[in-house]
Image 1 (cartoon, one colour):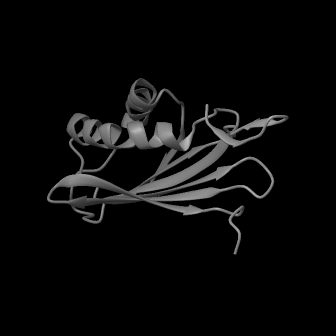
Image 2 (cartoon, helix red, strand yellow; image 1 turned 60 degrees about the horizontal axis):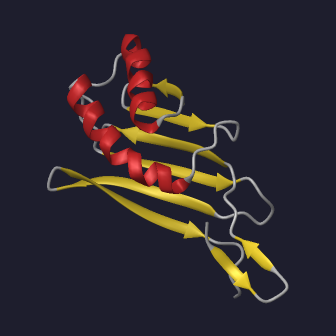
Image 3 (cartoon, helix red, strand yellow; image 1 turned 180 degrees about the vertical axis):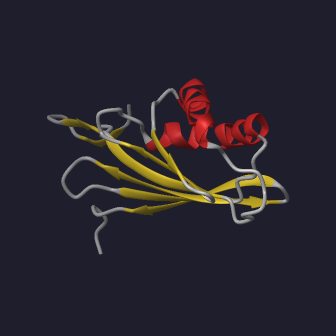
Length: 139
């Protein structure tokens, strides 16, 4: 835990809030291999093995849609820790090419922070770029 304000009478601890997640993994080359509907259960098992969460999964011919409600707490630092390993494993296991992706996360609290993660490839390696919208910042 991290202290963000301290005096002799009060100590406030920075709390972690549950989050809501949604995201998309994108295959920009429609002619390449992509996840098949019969592989969704195995894809979910891989998510559980690496991310330790059971995401809702939907797919079409060039996108995999993932979402997670606040009932399954998954914090942004866990996402950052697991997502790149998961993407590498998914590409290898299912022989697919994920070219890019985007994830959004909202904390479940008043005046919450939200996070945007952009996933892209550079030199055939996954990269993760994070943007934070902090409602608590003084302007």
